[in-house]
Length: 273
Image: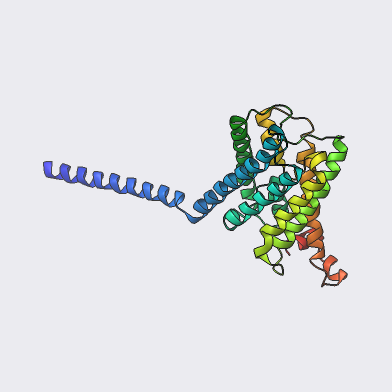
């Protein structure tokens, strides 16, 4: 009888161990699955990329204002373009180097990016922006005059129009160099960086040339400056969607008009290109 009980206990213990090992394997397989690992890598890359875009780009603004214009306005323009270019080449092969919620949403609309990853990317971009802004606030004594966020210098409408136009151009260029197989993909970072430099030259003194909701939201949260913030959320989003739509439209220039419009959904045909 004792031997039987001992055998039963032994089997139960083995069963418990097997069950535990099975559960452990299930947990391990979930956390080590390719999808989870790759997604985690993408999110971390977006946090790091956005962090340095804000730290370097906004940092040039702070240094210029606190240290008697040592960076100069052209220097700020070039700095923004260079840091975006550097980070595109650094993590573009990992996450796509969005660093911008408006770009992420536009890619998803035109089926260049999965919708389920959009909230993760936006959260990562906002976290990176807030962390970059916090770092600058800790390093420098940022006065109200040295605020490194974006505030309309003129009317909100003027800044909105500017943000729409420069965001349109940015997304138009991104669509051309990053989504069209006929382009030279290796030059994407240079093209995007130069576009940002040009946009800052034109719109920087008026709207701040955000082109990126995360770029404006991060400093606004850290420094509690929310004046005209809606301009830098809606303007870039509308501009990037329009820019992506326009490029997808002209992508079909080698097809007859009747072929483009004969499908049940013209927008669907655009997004599948």
